[in-house]
Image (cartoon, rainbow, N blue to C red; front, side, top):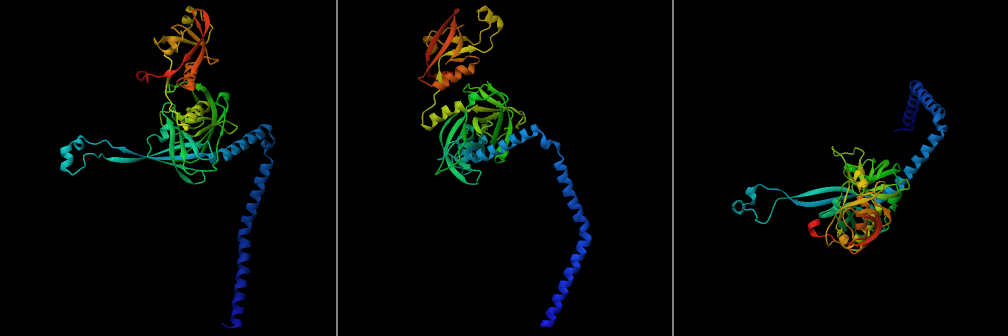
Length: 393
């Protein structure tokens, strides 16, 4: 191609660009003008928003910033726990018959099996990989995989678990320099405090929900007798084992269960108080067996004013002893039916969980002190906790 031909093509190309630019300016200019007008309109509307000068709104924005910071700080320490378990499937009676199995060439010692996957949450409490979760999340698991928010996956093993309290401690293999949570004080929470839950509901990773503490001492007939923290922060299947946080980003509970007829959150969730959980975790980490304690006393949970009046206890707060097992630690300490327990370990005995918590906290071999009214007289008692007899478990 000659120089003249190239120059001619170049001139045509330049002419096309000029024509296209002219046409674009003609047809798109109104559109560009409208976009500019809209942008200016939105900017002016934002400037005219009176709420921007509202002190209440400014305060709410401060709270919003705090929630963002809590998420940024704590979320990397919250993990997704995936489990795999091999279970025996139920089989037809024919398959249990040795003759039938031999006829079809089936091994006599094998049952049909199935691998089942489970999902839960947990949180890291040490840089070298100790993770807290619920016992029901990892119970009987053949394989445990812990997934971090960064996308990294680790194999893990159970260090210790307590089915009574539903608390488990697992350890990530070959972990180091992990982000950890901050442990709070569950005794300091109050109804109405903000409550934040982080976990993996229905398999959705790192879900952050917020509500309040609905009740800080809810007796829900759990095996350990410890009152749970109730919250309306959304907790769903998959949240189990995740942290319940206060507004300082500290863990005050381990999310455990919900009350629901549908299987989804209806605003009634329960968490294990972290102060109690820490005591269990310390034992699990050192390999100590957690044996159920026993003192041999039962109390009447529903004392009427008439009963209190009859016993000259009207206006008193405490637990009325209903039964004492002869020969039990409580019997040996001099406690009898109709005694009225007012304090346990210097705490007002306002509910049965106070007594049950003291027994669990002290453990087998420990001694709990209580103050009670017996036949109109105040007295102190010291009871040595023994291991619960098999027949009472």
